[in-house]
Image 1 (cartoon, rainbow, N blue to C red):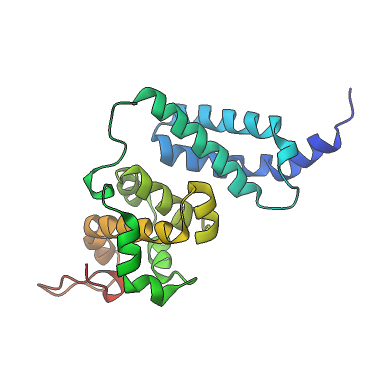
Image 2 (cartoon, rainbow, N blue to C red):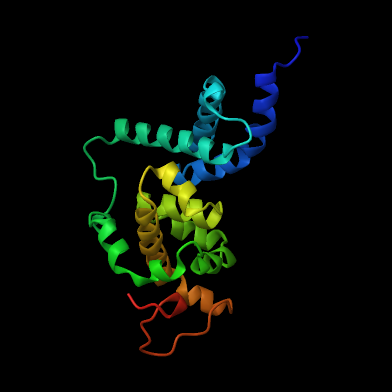
Length: 205
């Protein structure tokens, strides 16, 4: 029986414990358990083949998520080259919202709204997340389900931090409309007064 190499031991210690996290991310991207399994297997195969490009002890989770996302996007591009990937709401320039929304200036590196969504995650919320446009869904999953920082999400999605914030802002607003009543029923947020159009944290749209 051959002795594991330093490369193999490093891969087993840093990459393999993250397989469940990669599968969860793949499932939210693909919305199919079978496709998620394939994506996860291919992600770890690609990661092992390119392990020399990874710096041991750094952000293995971000690195694996980046590989997974790139594999998913390439497959989607091959399958739906002539289709729109995002809905009309994603066609607007996200940087415009990033410049205009003062909420981003207020929270900076803190993300109190993320705490709200982390409290209400269950099957109903996951189903609503799955219905988000792809770009918004990725940002919400990485931030609110995988607890990644703006900078890590920026690197995975290959967009500026401001764009990450704007996509989170939009994605959460869509979810808010769908889930506010559910959250009120669960006692997570107070029941909204009649005619009150404010969102979580009192921000109006």
